[in-house]
Length: 155
Image (cartoon, rainbow, N blue to C red; front, side, top):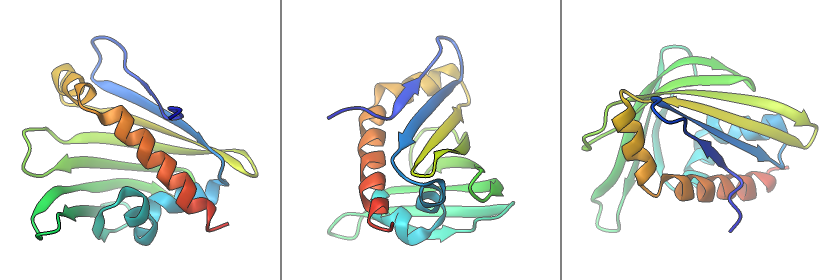
């Protein structure tokens, strides 16, 4: 599988930069992050809350077949500018991981192509390096592939 989602991590820094070009119009790419029904489809998780506004919040949860919570995350939305940017925190529950700050920038390349850039800032270089040791890059690429497939059907 081609890895279209690129992850860049400079040695000794507390951040990563994620970039991905999508064969989607800007408005559809943005909807994939802003509309709960679409987020649920491509992320494969339940959206419990998604308040797209300054000082809004969000909460996602995934359960196994027996109803046990296997993933739970939440955060605060610090800035929300439709089809431009989302600034939010990301915190996973029940893990020894400090909250992260995420800057999502959406850019129109052509009428049918757009780009997402995510700058994620971690509490420390150690937290960032731990994240990079997980199958994070592969999972994110797979999720972005699903996003593109699902959202193309909305055209």
